[in-house]
Length: 292
Image (cartoon, rainbow, N blue to C red; front, side, top):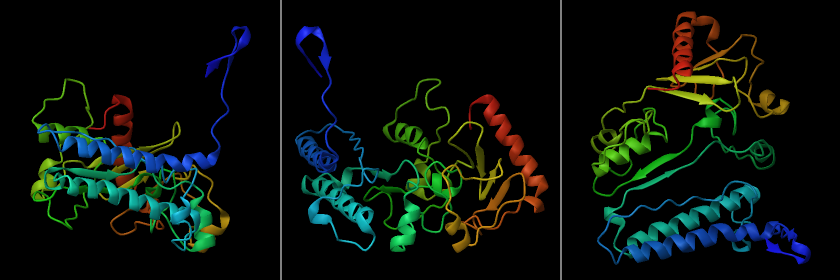
């Protein structure tokens, strides 16, 4: 914004969409530069590298267009993998890879434009999971969570226990020997023993919520949706028909995710005791404002 004559201000017009494609390359360039700077110091460092993609606008650079069979979004993901590789390479090049913990995760499931990718390209961004961004089905909330720590975490190790991004705070505090102030990260669990020793994770409960008064609760392998539907984004009729999702006649939904990750078999009428137990948990958490 700059001042105009007469004391009034004019606001510059928004940058055209094509310029948005420069964001990820620039963020990557700055991250690799910063990593090189840290190689000259003995001090520990923390780098938060927030991607602008694959969030809309979907803007793959020309050199990545046509690299996949999943349209512009697939090409954009191909490009983002390239940027991730550049940052991991920077750690290696600067002698930092073996002593750096890398956490890779995402904030939510795919945007609802993912439905058209299924129809146009046969590509399911949520894999077998049901739902997209905003939904309180698994596809709206379950995201990648990958941790790399050479020499500490064995390559290929998989821990299928429940974890949340809110657990990063307590875990990193334990790793660095820091004591969190009272009242800070009160919902956060320390997962360091799970990462380094393969122990079961300490979390058993997590809440799914996007819009007001639309909640689901995860307890172990079970997910209860306290609503007639986990959908928040509009689900196309053709999708439900193609993937055999019938209309729900019950007041809620209950799924055993270990057996039914696609959330196709609603066990609501068969598990009244479990539903009552999980609803009590949900109400207690909502009233206390704390999920521990």
